[in-house]
Length: 614
Image 1 (cartoon, one colour):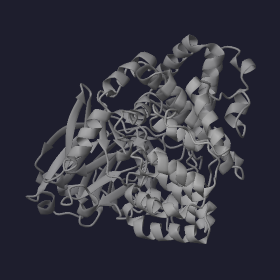
Image 2: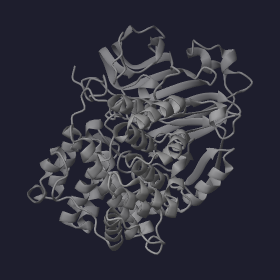
Image 3: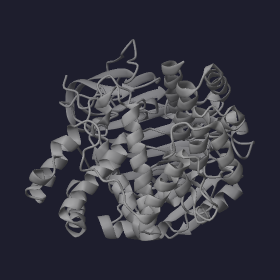
Image 4: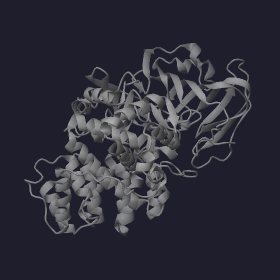
């Protein structure tokens, strides 16, 4: 066997899947999907074909042409990271039809009871497939090397509606004939009076981790010719606030097209999810998923949208071949995001972003000081869960590398290179060496000016990385230094500050301070009550490490209100790693009480933090 990906059973000598047709019946009462998946391979194949699955119950696998069963096996003991290997024995087929059901514990799915939603009356379900969770929704070659087109027939309660990372075709009544391959369901159930079918199609080839859907009682607001903002209908204030926050989206798309070429995905809609969504944003094509914590009331949350938009070129059009080359997705996208922000919101804001990223990158170097492999851009992940080593390194060190190339050749030349890079590799999945070969071929002699191997395979931060320089950045760093001497910033000095300025300031304070200093800072500026979660969480992290037990209540409230992993990782680590017995006990108690409100991916991350430090 020749693996193509350390996180997949896919064999590189086998034909890859090019198309998947899915029929999905969503059973909200059982938190289960009863389904069929028709996989089409790039060519006919004879032999054992390996697929990835996780917590899936396979009923049968058949040849769709003859309707005869195909011999298959499922590994008896699942790999703790990759899940279960499904081996199908083929004799010249290019298609296989799999009949199966998902598990209530599917790692990509979060089923929310009505009480966990805004409406309190209707259930909700959403997916998060990055990095390796699509396999818990349908058996597949779950690697970004296998780009697929897909279509979906989704049967849902008629009181709900569905959105997908695909083009919506129509909403219609179920048809009896459609249930014939779902042998766990009768046609009567499929065609129940309270059921409706939503059809979708994705015509561009995407990596499986970009497969996404959400089903709930959804409403929307139009914010541009290519953009709607969706959220639960009952969350009208969220919808209105999101429409205001993201009103400038069309301008960002236009700037992205100027910088990187045509927008290839037709629409750029946004779905604001319930608070349990584990990421800031997820760049699902045509339907970006967002945490409600990005709605800050001052349009600065649009920077997360700028990042997900930038993925439309770097990540979605050109994709890393596997997670060992994740920087190709995130480093380029962080660079592209900041170029968009620079045009739309100004150079000062872009510089603040770089500064916050620089601080975060240095923090990650400290986090991985005992595991330097994960301070490399190109790293080894055999036997490693990508969710456990998810960090700012591919984002910020990757950004620094891209910026280093721009600084070497100049922006005009680099912009031309970037457009050519995107046009050359669009709809392909590549590795670091492919990028470096292209770089050296198109910018001759670059390897003599920049140590490319040190940047991609070396540990730590290279000496020719760039700490940002601007008046506002320097001023904030200076004020953070003064705090160490006991001087608090004056109200005049912070009068113009928004969330980013406060975040940069807090992140540059000592890891712990005198409790009296921390409480005085909060008394004057009410940081623990900030509506901007980056500010709130940065302050609460400081309060925990400074042994300010007065903020334990706010920490608990925050960890029970949101499920974004950035905040969970920060606060649970602070409690468990730097706290005493009381803080460690508080961490265990909060997780025990809040666990079921977190997405399965987030549950796993918090469990690993607590097991490491407690």
